[in-house]
Amino acid sequence: STPQGVAERRGIPAASFVEDVETYLRQAGLEVNSALAFLQERLQQYKMVEMKLLAQQRELQAKIPDIEKCLDIVATLKAKKALGEALIADFELSEGIYSRAKIEDSDSVCLWLGANVMLEYSCDEANELLKSNLENARASLEVLVGDLHFLRDQQTITQVTIARIFNWDVHQRRSKQSVMKET
Image (tube, rainbow, N blue to C red):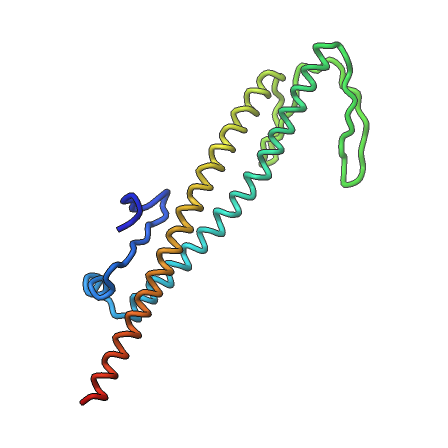
């Protein structure tokens, strides 16, 4: 039985807690070593998925401040335009090489969309797009954190199951040995 009856979460299969090892092995039709090998493989799969999710989490955590910075820049451009002032900005041309620019009365900005694509937007369109991207990134991060919690729970359940099966097997072997010694 899994927590809250969840069978999987976004393609991550749920681990089931094994109450009775003997019944579990009989129902699964597995020997102890086969069951342990299966569970070890599942644990490795969980760890691989965790590594991928952690990489996605790092990407999103880096992306959110960039989007916020872009929103601030668009807001500054709009504010300077409203005041009729020019904006003085330093642009990085290459690593360690900067150029100073004076931006006067700008109605549009160019946003880097990725995949070697940059598009020009009005300041209002850019602001809406960036806000939408920020909301999406935050929502994705929230889902990702939930997935990581679910995944860690599954790893813990699997590790406990492995330990229970191993301990059950050790107990069975000792019981057989003690019976053999008595006869």
